[in-house]
Length: 347
Image (cartoon, rainbow, N blue to C red):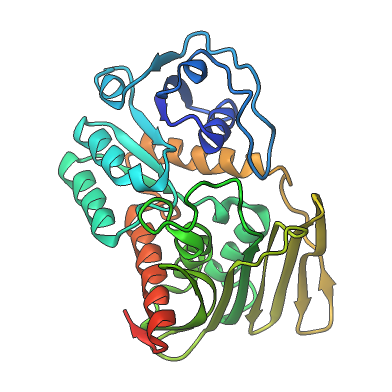
């Protein structure tokens, strides 16, 4: 049994706590929060943009720590799950690894690539596993697309378009602060940057156009340039001040023998599946495959299950590896530089 300590009891910390209740081989043994009420189980003030609202939690058998150092000193903790604000990820992750704990850190891995480098080096020196919580590959539609590319089910991937757009996230303090949260590219588009890197490898360059909001990019379109100019990959992401559509994402993947389509939004507070995952085959068929659970919390169950299995086997995860997440962060910073300069940026 892997004993888990969760650091940071906000919305994502709560989602991870709920997900671990369904993960085989892992159990939450401790939480860490500076908030005395949360340490006592009063999570009623926690809200997010999906999943359940916070409630009064029964934390019987779960140790509650006020400081990260106190949790690090607990010899029973094997894995530290870091759900702190992005600016705190690097310091907390390095501390956990230095204390000979495995670590899983929520995305984005860090705000600066240099901090991501520190995290990777700390894991190597400690001989411990570091995972970064990029959950997108565990959502059913994206998991299907990943397997289709990996197994060449429909032949070679020729091209793809991705989108991820939100309304102004008024509930996230400092969202546009490059030193605290990172803005739309680092906090939002990093999902698709990670998925593109996972599917296609590292591009040789990016060409992005968009608009700025202070020091961060508010909205952008990007062309990802690969060595042989194939596949042809583009992505659109960012914030539009249209509170009636707080979230939308989707993709169109072109293969030699099929096209995969998917488009989902939240409109006026209600889910709107305008295009369920559909396979358009080269012989004219339209196939809508059966998928797993539509509950977004279940994607986190699968993600943290992957962490549990990887630790049990003593191996890194091909989906949640730190080097992969660091490359996604590099892509995000390169796209920001491209918007600012109006030029291609090489990687």
